[in-house]
Length: 147
Image (tube, rainbow, N blue to C red; front, side, top):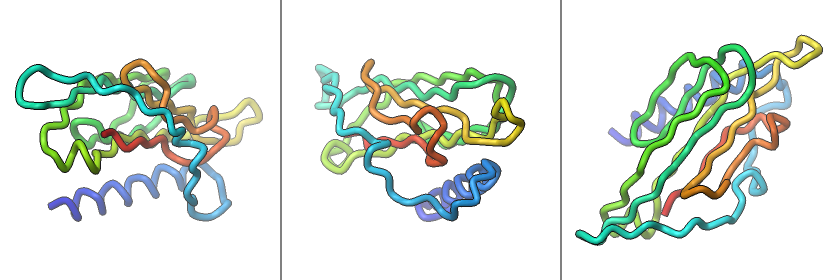
C-alpha cells in the first residue's frame, strides 16, 4: 500500500513540477532547502507520543494546484495564499527514530513578465521554519522529515 501511495505522490509531484515551465530537467537533491533546524518535540504525558504542530503554506496570488502530505495525502485547487495546519502525532518507536515526511508541492503561478514559476512554499514545525523553496526560485517542493 505504501508503494502505491509513494508512486502516486511521485506522479503528482512530477505533474506539478512539469507545469512550472522550468525546463531544467528533473529536480535534484537540494540540502539547503531543508535546513537542519530541529524543532523541539512536544511530549505528550500519555503513552510516549510525540506531537508536532506542522504548518504548510503556499504563497502568491490567484489560484494554484497544491499537493500535500501531512496527516493525509491530498491534491486540491486552492486560492492563494493558502495555509494548512495540523498536529502530527508520532506514536511508534520507528516514527520517532526514522521519522515521517511532511511535504507540500506548490503548483505554478504567473510572474510579472507572464511566465510561470513554482509558487512559494514554506513548512514550519512548532513555530520554526524548517523548509522552503527559496521564495519560488527553486522548482523543488518543500519537504521535511519530522522526528
